[in-house]
Length: 133
Image (cartoon, rainbow, N blue to C red):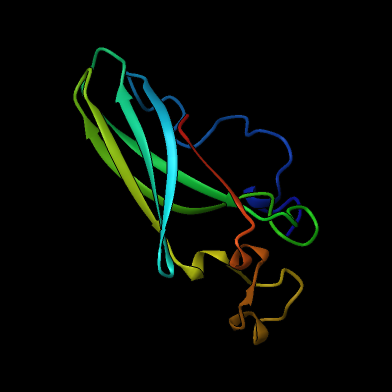
C-alpha cells in the first residue's frame, strides 16, 4: 500500500482535502476524548473566525505506535460536517468504536482481507488528531 494511499504518505499533500473551497477560516481548540465502555468519544472546539457563514468538515485521524511498520501512518476514522455562522463556536463530538482500531493486513489476498486483526490501539496505545485545511 506504500505510495498508493494517503495512509502511508510521509509528505504533506500538495492540496489538502477541500483546499480552496471555503471563503472563511476555522480555528480548532481543546481536542479531548473520554472512554465510555467500548466507545471513545472525542470532542473538539471549533470556531468560525472568518467573515462568512460556512460549513466545515471536521476530520479525526488515528495513528498506531506501529505506524510505518506495516500499519498506516494515519487513518481517517471519523468525520462530521458542521455549519457555523461567522464568529460562532461549537463543540463537535466524534465517536470511535473498536472497528476503528482494527486493520486489514496490506499484504493479504482478497479472501483473507475480510479478516480484521486487532491493532495496538486495542490495548490503549494510539494517538489522534483533528485538522482542517
